[in-house]
Length: 116
Length: 112
Image (cartoon, rainbow over all chains, first blue to last red; front, top):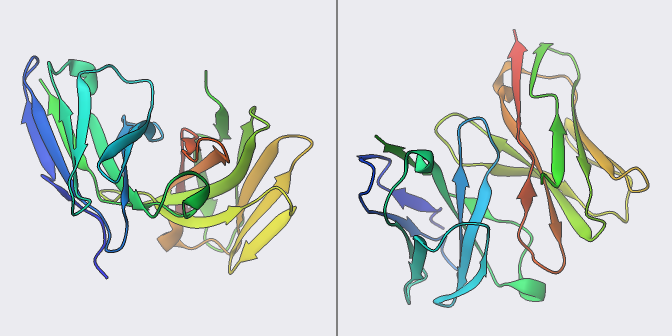
C-alpha cells in the first residue's frame, strides 16, 4: 500500500505567477482534500474532491482551483500568487465522503511554496 | 473566528514527564475529535481520536480526556520521550461537513 505523495517538495515563485501542485492519493482512496498550513498555524481547509468533482470548499478565493483525475490523483492550482500564499500545502486522502467517509485522513508530506 | 482553540502554543517537558495539551471548541455539532502529530518536513499523522460518547480514550502512552459539558478535550502523553518532540494539533469535525477544523498547534520539546 503506497502512501500519499506530493510534488514538488519545494517551490519558489514570484508575485503574480501561477503554480500547480500535485498529489497522488493513497491506494484505494477516492477522496482528496487540500489544506494550506501557514507557518506556526494549523492546516486550513481549501477544498475537497470526490470522484473528480469538488465536494466542499473552505474560505479561499476563486484563484485557488483544483482538479481530480480518474485515478484519484489531484492538482491544486493557484493563480495570481500573493505573498501571503507562502505556506506548506498539504494533500490528504481518504475514502468516501459525508456519511460514507472514513474517519482517517492520510496526509502527504506537503509542498513548501515560497512567494517572493 | 477560530472554532478550535489550542493551548499552550509551546511546551517543554523533561523525559519521563507528562505532557498535557488542551483544546476547547465552540460548535456543538462537532462529533469527532482527532489529534495529529507532525514532525518537521512531514505532514500531520493521526495519533488518536475520540467521539463524544466516551470521556476518555487511551492508546499506549497517549490518552484523550473529553469533557462534553465544558466543550473541552485534552491530550495527555505519559512518560514523555525525546522522540515525542513534534507539533501536535487537535481538530474537530462535524457529522455534517466531515471536514476537520484544526487548532493552531502545540510545539512539544521533550528534553532527555
